[in-house]
Image (cartoon, rainbow, N blue to C red; front, side):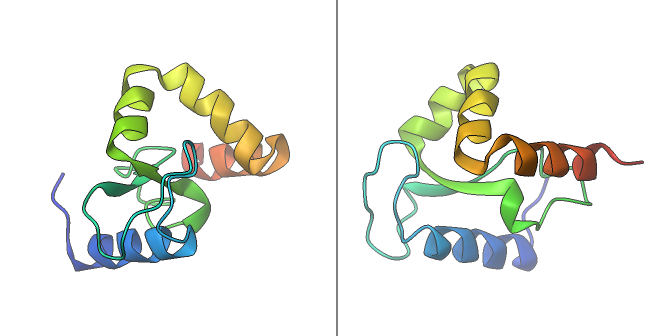
Length: 97
């Protein structure tokens, strides 16, 4: 899926919101660093939640890669980060037809 201008702006917003710090390991990055990603919780292909700030978290390359290899651990971690209620509401928004 191609990234467009809105995706780039959303990525910058998420990384700034999270103070240019990986939410999992706590490593801080200089502003505009490409090593810090705005990782989507539910796929960015889901248009309803693609640019929803609750559907993204700043993760360093290493943590983002780890979670791609361990998606169940990622979602358990997100439930702890967001809280089960917010996670459930986000999941319902993402899955709504």
